[in-house]
Image (cartoon, rainbow, N blue to C red; front, side, top):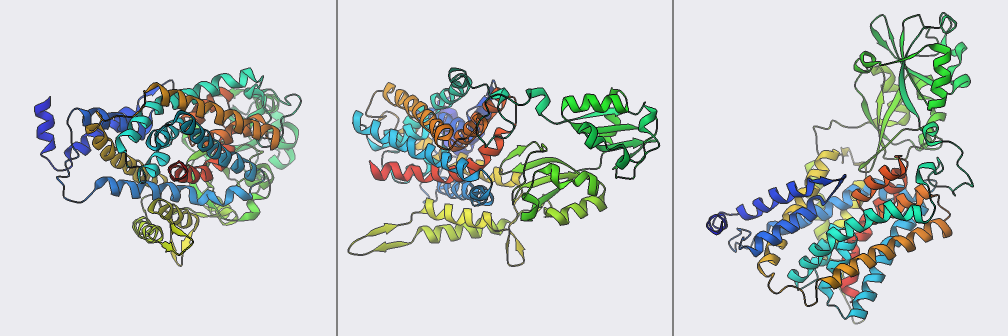
Length: 547
C-alpha cells in the first residue's frame, strides 16, 4: 500500500485525482436518501489518504490546483444564486423567506462565536465547527483563506460535518411532531399563515395527471368549450389520442368514443371527470406520443402576476407546463403556483403553440449543448479584480477579498440575461459540473495537506466541536423557525422550507419533501437558498474576523 502511495506521489496531480475520484464516489453514496455530498466525501478521503502519506503531486511548482478549484467554486456559488438573488425579494412572500435564510446564518455565526468565547476555542476550530454545523462547503472554503491552522480547520469540519448533517435530518423528522405540526396537512399556500384547520386532505390537494378512455355518449359530439369540464369538474384535458394521433386539444375539439385522454386535476376532481367521460386507464401510448418539452425562460413580469391557473395556457394555446425549474430545484406546476422572473419552465405542445406561449412568457432557453465559457473565465477575472481592491487611509484599512469579489461578480453576471448581444446562458449541468469539480479540487488539496499534518490536530478534545456543532444546528433551527412562524407569520411549509434553504442543505430539502409528502416546500427553499448561499460564504470570513 505504501509503495503504491509512493509511486502515485511521483506522478504530477495523481494524488489529487485519486482523492477527487474516491471522494466524489463516497459523497454520492446514500443512506435513506441522505449523502455526504462532494465536499464531505472529498474531505474525509483527503484527510485519511493524506495521513497515510499521500501528497498532492504538485512537486512545489508554485501552481495550486486547489486555488483554481477555489475560484471556480466560489464564483459558481454566486453565479447560481444570481438569477434568483434579486427576484427572491420581489416575490409575494419572498422577502420573508429571504429574511429567514439570512437569520439562519446570522444566528449560527452568533452561537459559534459565543461557544468559542465560552470554551476558549481557537479560531480554526470555531470556523470548522460552524462550517460542519451548517454542512456548508462555501463557509469552509471562505474561512480557509483567513485561517493559518489549515489542519485544525479541516479536522473540525470533517468531525462535525456528518453530525451536522445527521442532526439536521433528525430535527426535521422529529421536531414537527413535538411542535404538533402535521406537515402533510399544511396549507396549500406555503407562504401564508397556517390555517386553523386544513382545508383539503393531502390526497385531494395535489394536482396529478391521469389517463381516461371516452365511453360516455354524453361526452361526444360536443366541442370542449360546451362540455366545460374545467367549470364542472375542475379538470383540464391536456392531451388526446384520436385514431392513433396525439393531439393538443382546443376549445373546438370534439371527442369520440374510444378516444384516450390525459386530464389534470385533484383526485376528487378526477373522480368527477371519470363519471362524465369514462374509466381511468393506463395511457402509456399517449404519454409516449407526447411531443418533447421545450424549455422557456420566464422574462415577462406580467406572466408572474397571477397563478398558473389564471394564465390558461391549455385553454388559450393548447400547451401545458410540465415542470418549473427554480434555481437548482424543480417545482410541481400546481394551479396555485406563481411563476417568477428567470424561472425555467418545460412546455409541452405543438411547435406552433409552444412558440406562441414562449413569446408570451419570455423566450426559448438557448440550446443546452452550448455553454458560454467566457462568462466563467471573464467573470472570474472580474471577481479577482474586484477582490483585489484595497482602500487604506488613516481611519480604515478595507480589503474586499477574493471570495467576496468572486461572489459579487458571480451574482451580477448570473443575474444579467445578456451583456449587449451576448447571452450569459450556462446550462444547469455545466454549472453543477464546474461547481462540484471546483470544491473537489479545493478540498482535495487542502485536505491532503491537512492530513499530512494531522498529528498536529486540534488543540481541543474532539468531543467539544461535535457537541458544539449539535448546539449550533439545534439553536439555529429553533430560533429561525420561531422567527418564521411567530414574527413573520409563515405557515409550516414556508417556515421549514426557508429554514432548510438558509442551511443551504439539499439533504435537508430531500428529508423535508419526504416528511411533508409535497414539493411545495421547494418554493420557500429556493427563495431562501439564493440569498443564504451567498451569506453562508461570507459567514466564513465573519467568524474569523470576529474571533
